[in-house]
Image 1 (cartoon, rainbow, N blue to C red):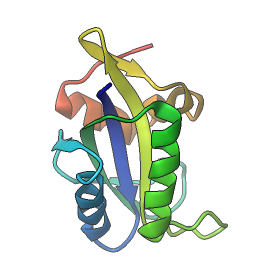
Image 2 (cartoon, rainbow, N blue to C red):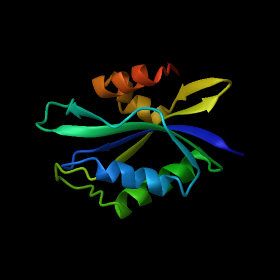
Image 3 (spheres, rainbow, N blue to C red):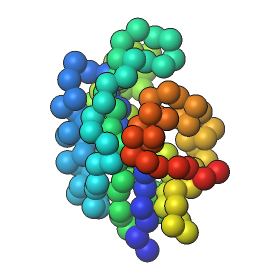
Image 4 (cartoon, helix red, strand yellow):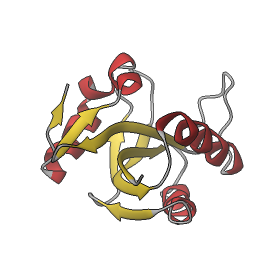
Length: 133
């Protein structure tokens, strides 16, 4: 069964090259559609610096748990470290999945407070996307 996922890509490296690389790697999993251009936002957790962000939709024949694991593997392959470093080479978060003609919030994204972040709200607004749940 093909699923449609709403993904947020982010990086705080010096340029947006890692987002473009991640998009290319994701295209090997399924059909990817950039819903916004790459945007740069200040860190919204009070830390100094800025993030490049991109909102994409991905259609793929993969279920949620396996997809989440696959994204972590892709992040690691693209240089993501999960330590105390403030450098985030790439972060790929599942925001929502498509069902019944709309987007439905991913429980993990909701628990992490993704939809309260100004950058996420700005990207969703720019793409004209409303999230249910």
